Length: 195
Image 1 (cartoon, rainbow, N blue to C red):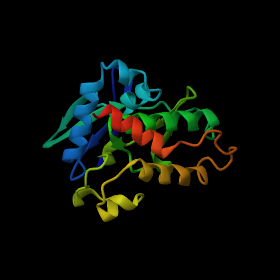
Image 2 (image 1 turned 135 degrees about the vertical axis):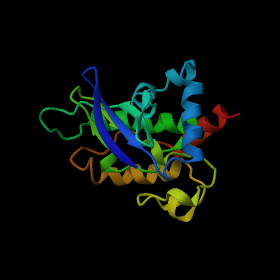
Image 3 (image 1 turned 45 degrees about the vertical axis):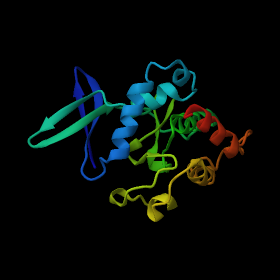
Image 4 (image 1 turned 30 degrees about the vertical axis):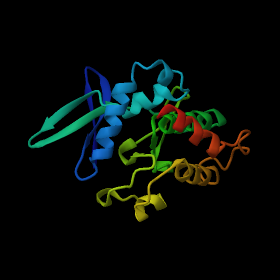
């Protein structure tokens, strides 16, 4: 996937030209986001607005024989800053919103954390999302997640493993999390939603 920046009417966007990374599960994820956009239950999820801001395309562009999807772009802070405890909470809310929708991010890495200039933090690059409990396809393996390499069906615990790795890298300067996520409790909420 190739990313480019562009502006339209002085508004910045990111354009992503997809190759093999555009797959059936990513398309299903986009359809789920569209279907849940007006859902009151979805809107009650703390990470709802941030997930929709970065994950839902706002348009497309044509470049010769390629089509690229346009996404909102973050306005980076003028002065670099380290992630805060509030940023960590925002990321966790976004991850849990994805889980509530029935998807795992599977690429929770430092490169996929975006800090903006308004003290907001975003979980970026949702192209690797996979439906919870469905096998992965072999066409789009990632380096950051064991289930993508073994093609095992992902579940919340795969994202949580990556989350805990972030605690010792990106968030190592912060005190430990006050509230650990109960994987079993989150799985139960997901199960109730999808019944």
